[in-house]
Image (cartoon, one colour):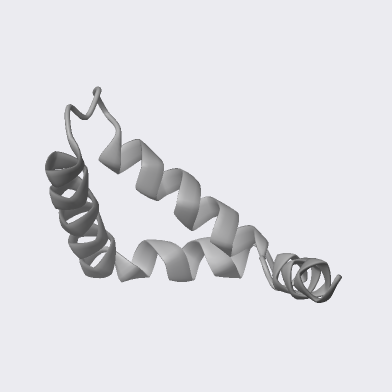
Length: 66
């Protein structure tokens, strides 16, 4: 029971920007099939670095959601 409440509360904290970020991250990480975990980790790190450099994009997305 306690776990269900915690999960529920965490789900309420997810915003439209979180969904956008997750979708964008997946599109950058998975442009093709990832053969192994090490490659997946490398793709995630590269994608996160690319997103960090393009921070202005997320500011514009956030502003469009207001």
